[in-house]
Image 1 (cartoon, rainbow, N blue to C red):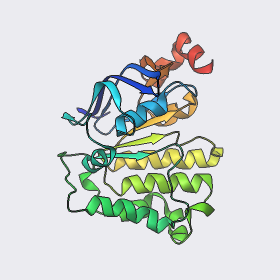
Image 2 (cartoon, helix red, strand yellow; image 1 turned 60 degrees about the horizontal axis):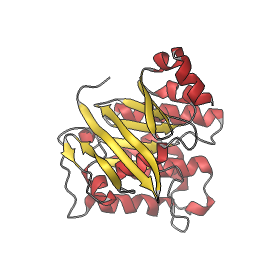
Image 3 (cartoon, rainbow, N blue to C red; image 1 turned 90 degrees about the horizontal axis):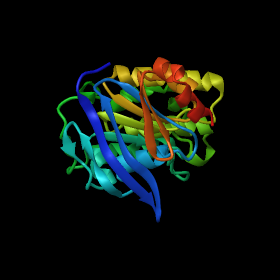
Length: 248
């Protein structure tokens, strides 16, 4: 487990339309740590991720990266400051090739207005393209393939790789393991460990607590837009109320 907090979320309240989804959500991700946000579908995990990334406006609360307030910044500026995001639907452009999808993020990262405000995190990732080739060698043979013709697992790889092109301090993965065959889940779990090895902290939204326990050092359990539990996977498994909530 790492030291200080890279990402700090405090007392978030977020609506989708007129519906209140998040109710006073607070969580943190520390240096060089993998944290999973666990809950059933509809618990508020994706809304939490979108709120952190600035894709949804928050009604109250704060998002901080290494102590810097990001709450009022648009999504692209949060990305520029060190938050990477691979959404549940991957966001892969279907008409663009894998290489073009990655180059969009590379352009954003090298744009003249790009300002990295953090002093640590993924500084060791001096060449993100090389790191991605090492992380997902499967993508080398797919560079010229359009996003429309990628499998679900391949699209998830591209989404993670695209986020990595920004050399993030913290990487948000929304349902990265959903719909994957067991062998591919193992492959992605290995990738998470390697991303952490690059000095990048991770916050992963996950519906399956068994899968979450394979990769996370700490868990937050969410239900109906509230955090019900924070602790280690073993503590979660020992908590009957938590397990009842997750299993419905």
